[in-house]
Image (cartoon, rainbow, N blue to C red; front, top):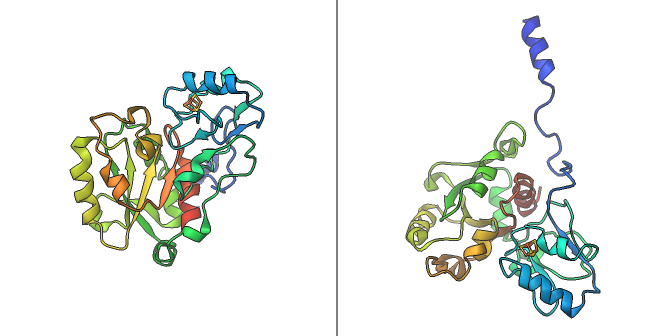
Length: 250
Ligand code: SF4
């Protein structure tokens, strides 16, 4: 018994105590900061460099719903574009993912558009079905990590389940390929109402690097109300956790 206790104590505390304030590496690329003195030539060069058309050609604003977080624009314009390690970049409004030059504040969800039934019904327990709609397994791995011993998101009653029949909503990853469009619709229909939809990762939010491809069918995204957008390429577990906690009002 003493031996076992010593082993346990040697392991230390493995879970993250405060999921809201957990520091991450300075090298992590989260919320960008863009100075408001971008010149036209600089914007043109950044737009030409960006692999996913995430930079607005008029203002130089970065759309986090498209961004691959490759850091190329920041390397091109050091001192003007910088990616901070702020991982709280979730939003419940698509347009709020556009980070404009001069934006300094944190990115938070808009409380006024959160559906009343979401907080009333799901605050104490939320079960989610993950649908990989043409994903590359990167976001899927990060979402799986939210339930591991470090993040232990299950402590808030928030977990992934195997069947849509047992779920309160779906989390979509991947750009939604034509092959997955019908399966996604069937899965969503199998979730009892009321239900929520979360888009995890830039591919799910905009199509990412596949945006505009004829191999995609994103009609499901345009035909349904999206409750939460989680940027990232892939999305960080703490982005997912903090975004869902914000949505549920924790
Ligand atoms: S970090 Fe984002 S905005 Fe900048 S070049 Fe890469 S994809 Fe484009």
